[in-house]
Length: 620
Image (cartoon, rainbow, N blue to C red; front, side, top):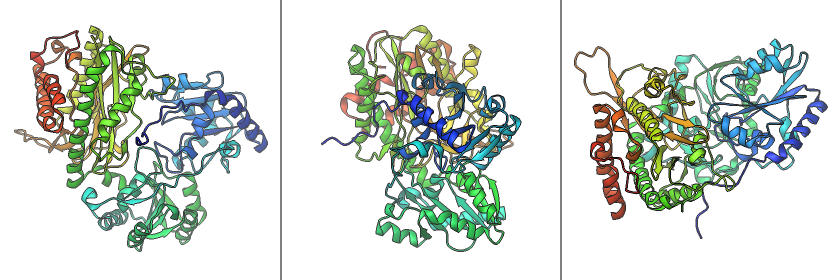
C-alpha cells in the first residue's frame, strides 16, 4: 500500500457554508449582548500552522491561508490579510459577506476606529490574542467609543457543532546526535538568562521553544514537529512541563521526569497562580503568550513581564551539530529536487504534467531517501497565473496543467531529523517570453546580492532587504513579501526572530539560517521566486576592516533555470557567482543522483556564457 501523502488536495475552503455560519455567529453575538467579535487564525500558542480544532477562521470565512483575522459586526464584516494572500482571499471568501482588507495598507485597529459603532462591545477570546494585541484592540475600540471585552467560552466554539477534537500527537525525544546540546545544558542557559532579566520564572508558550529546550519533538500540527504544550522554568528548582499524558509513552515520560515535573494541561493556570501568589516576577514571550496568561499571573498578585523569549535567540543560532545536519539535509534534499527537475524537464513540455502530478512526484523523490519525516509546509506549485498567488495551494478544483510558454513556480521543503529545508525554483515550460526572462533576471540579481553580501556584525535584516529589491526597483517593480525568514533545525520552517525584511530589526548572527527569496508576481500571468537557504558565517578577511564582518554560506543545492536568465542584464561578478554556484551544485550532487539525472545536471549547470538562449526543449 502506498504511504499516505503529506499534502491533501481537497478544497478545504468551505465558502458556500459561510453565510449560514456568519448568521449563526451574529445570533450568538445577540444572545451574549455583543456588538461584534474578532476571529483570528490562532491557537493558544500563536502558531503559524494550527490543528484542525483551531481552524476557526477557515471554518467561518473559507480562507485557508496561514495568516489572517476577521471582524464580524452586526452589519458589516471584514477579513484582514497581508500581501501574500490578497489574491487567494478573493478566490476563497464570499465577498458579499466579507470585505477583503490589506492589513498593511489598512491596519485592523484603524478599521475598527472607523467602523465599530459607538457604544458597541467587541468580544475576543483572551487565549487567542497576546497581551499587546489586546491592548491595541482595546485602544482602537475606545477611540471608536466602544469597548473590548473577553468572550469566554469562545464564540465560534459555541456554534461549531462538529469541531474536531484537540490533537494527541505523540511526543518523542530528539536525539543528542541531532540536537548537539543536552536539555540539561539548555535549561542552565535559560536560568542564566533569567538571572540577567531579574525574573523568577519563564513561561514557555512557544511550542518550538519548548521542543528545543527539552530536546523533544511532536506531531500536533501539520508539517512542523511541534508538541502543543506549556512549560514553566523557574530560576531555581525543577521546571514543569504541561502536556496531555496520552502523548507520552512510558519511556519518554521517564526520560522527561529526569528534567521536569510532568503535569496535565489543566494544571497550568493553577500553577501559574501559585507561583505568582508571592509576588513573583514571571517572564512572558510577548509574541506568543496569551492575554489569559497575563491575567492569571496578575490576578494572583504576580508581576507579568513581557519581552522576547530568551530561548528564541538561543534556538536561532545553530550549534556545530545542527549546522552539519543542515548541510547534510540540504545535500540529500538537493539530490531529490534535482532528480525531480530532470524528470519535469522530460515530462512537462507536452502538457502531460499537472500541478498535483508535480507535487506528488517531488514528494516521491524526497521520500526515496528513506529519511523524510514530512514536508516542511504545503508545497506551492503554481503554473501560469497560479504562480502569481504567493502562497497558492493547489486543490483538485484549481489544479492546472503545466503548459508551454508558461512559468512554473515550485516552493517546497522537507523535514528531516537533521534539518529543515525550504527551496523555490521557477521553471520555464517551453519558451519563455523576453519579459519573463528580464523579470526573472532582476529577481536573480537581487538573490545574488543577498548571497554575496558582506556586512558588519550587528547588521539587521532590514538593512539588507533593499539589496534584494534594487534591480526590481530600477524597473519600477517590487514584491509584496519579505526577502527572507529564519528557519529552524527540524522545527518550524518559519522561525523568528531573525528575518530579512523591512521589519527585520534583529541583528543577524553567525549560526543563523535564513531564506533568500526575492520574487516578482504579475497578476493573472505568472509568478517568479528564487529561494535558497543561507547560513550566516564569518566573512573572509578584508584588508583594513575596522569591524568584524559576516557573510552568507548558501546551503541549498539545486540548479537555477538558465533559460530564464538574460546575461546582458548581469554584471561579470554576478555571472561568476552563478557559475560558481552551479559548479558547486554539480560537484556535490553528481555522485548522489542516477546516470540520467547526472547527464541532465551537467547540462543544467554549465557556465552561463556558454549557453545561447534556446526556445526548444533542451535541458536547462
